[in-house]
Each structure stands twice: as structure tokens, then as C-alpha cells.
Length: 150
View 1 (cartoon, rainbow, N blue to C red):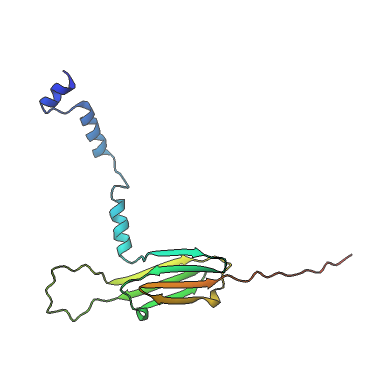
View 2 (view 1 turned 120 degrees about the vertical axis):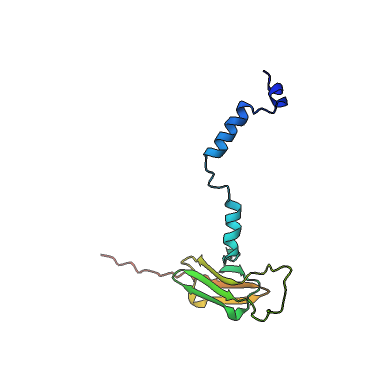
């Protein structure tokens, strides 16, 4: 029988059977990858840009909906540590929501910093929902060695 005759009878072709066998018998570890990434990012990993200029190392971290007093930024052990927490308002007992999409909870992120920055002179600013952490680069020290003749 020709392939078109099989299709007219609604019978599966050998290719269809083989494809279904492969689809059912192999686990695809990346099948749910996009949904895993989006759910992971929604549970507390803020988006950030990290870059350097000639003078400094800069990390810009998006923290929309956070108040600066609810955030903590530390520079320790070769990394910038950002953590914060928001809580849902308890005063909405009389509200009947049609849609409730805002998220509440904690954020946490660590950003590695290079050894050539001066953590002691780090600064942090908050503007329009973005934290900007700046760490100046250390001045390169030159030590002139004296040469001893023997």
C-alpha cells in the first residue's frame, strides 16, 4: 500500500509509530527548562547588571517594590551580598480581588567581586527601584626595589 492510502484509512505510518516510541521512552531534561527558569527568578533572584569601568566595579540590581529600609547590602569575603524582604499588607481584609499578581517575599543574591577592588570604599545608592553598588579599583602599588651588589 502506498503512504497516501494508509493516511486515508487513518492508520499510523511506521514513521508515526517510531516517533511516538521515541517521544514516550526518552526523558527530555530540558523540556520544562523555561518554566523552571521563570519560577526560579520569581522566588527571589533579582536581575542585575555587573560591569567595570577604568576606575570602578559596578553592580546594578533591580529591586522594584522594595523600600531601601527593607534591604541589606554587605561586601564581604570577595562578594556583594544583597538581601531583602517585603510583606503583604495585612489591611486588605475587606478587599475582594479580581486579580492579585504582585509578589511578596525575600530576595537574595551574591555577586562575586574581583580582588583588585577596594571593598572598604564601597558605596551603595538606591534610585527608582535599582540598587547601584560601586567599588573603586585599588591603586596599583609600585615598589622600587634596591639592588644589592655582592
